[in-house]
Amino acid sequence: MCLPDKSKVFEFCESFIAQRIRGIQSQIKEVSQALASENKSTAGDKHETGRAMLQLEREKLGQQLFEAEKMVELFRRVDRDTNSQSAVLGSLVITNLANYYLAISAGKYTTPETEVYCISTFTPIGKLVLGKSSGDTFTFNNKTHKILHVL
Image 1 (cartoon, one colour):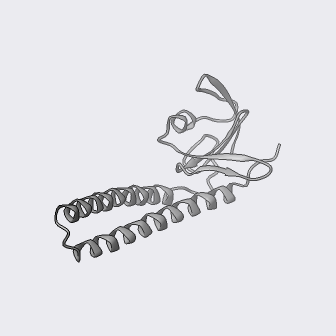
Image 2: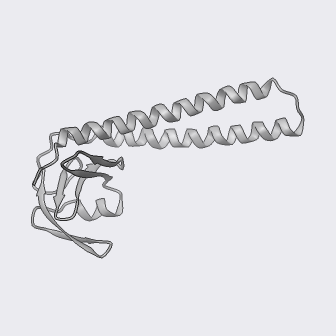
């Protein structure tokens, strides 16, 4: 069995957050530019509807940026060198069915040798894994996972 490189998974999560924030900021810039060009138009009701939709979009993106910034704050608390016997924030949990990195919800980190699901401790499975040690089991979606290693 090939154990995943925990530092590479940490870097994957770090990159995920940076890309997410850049993407949202880019969209906000585009919407702001579109809103500025809408201000120059005087097309009546159609103009007002377009402005309102752009303002709603900007608010939605602002909320997404706020959530991404909260993710950054959580990720700053992740100790990339944590070495606990039980699963904590920053742990890499190897089970008989899947591998989990307890940090942020960043999707699946994949290499030719292994896959790791990057999950938040606030997700349903994250809550189940938190505090567990090697040899412990937990059931998720009617499948029983046995923890082989906590790194």
